[in-house]
Length: 344
Image (cartoon, rainbow, N blue to C red; front, side, top):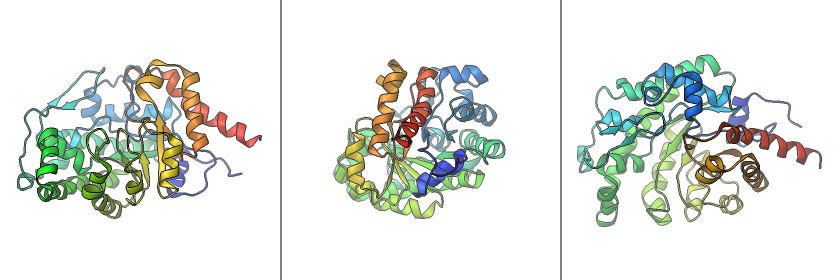
């Protein structure tokens, strides 16, 4: 039996395929809730803009909920805000979003990274927060940064409909856009690594709800392989929706792990990737965590554990009104499952 590990080591070992004392619990996207905002006095939108408030709120995932990681990036808009997109800054009961009715760019030639990109308030909020968290918790908990992938950025800067039509009508122009945008992913990802991030989440929303698995192979597989080589920390790919039809390709991405949605059966997902990439997930957000209770949470955790999922997490950023008792049940259920299976 492996001796008890620090949470940081537990997460990093799991991502590297090394022995762990138990399955780690994390959320590579966002674990903030209204209750936690109130607890530490760090509400949205201020917690997305001020590094000190950001760090206060992010730390609660570790200090209050008992997760093994700290993830300070609560939305998907920091890079887009710094690029000049129009942001709708919500209050504490909703996430900030990009207003995509007025895209800022039309073609790959328009893609330009502002000179002050890393000094912009909204990008710097995260890098400075990571510095604060690394200093205070870096020896204990895994610090997980987040840099948006080029497909997600394309939705924000070109508009979803326009970009998807481009992918049909002009695949070559689409690749030009993705290759230009990937440099933003690298720039911001490296800035977070330099600030102390142990791991990066890489959301790239080529979801089954919008595009086929073949699209992933055609447009993103080689880019993701490149990202895994250029960013020298474990990378967690995150794609919402049904991804079973592209998991075989994703397993070849060289990413350390895939954070997957509850629309995918964990046993089927594990069978498809066949150990080629670690899986993180996939406790349902809108039904289980938001509207059910600890018993249902426990059942979902056990189902993931039975399937051999390497890290247990909510499927995505949790609903902000999620009850803390349901979140607390996730690490509790993991320990219960481990104890039960030790005694067999």
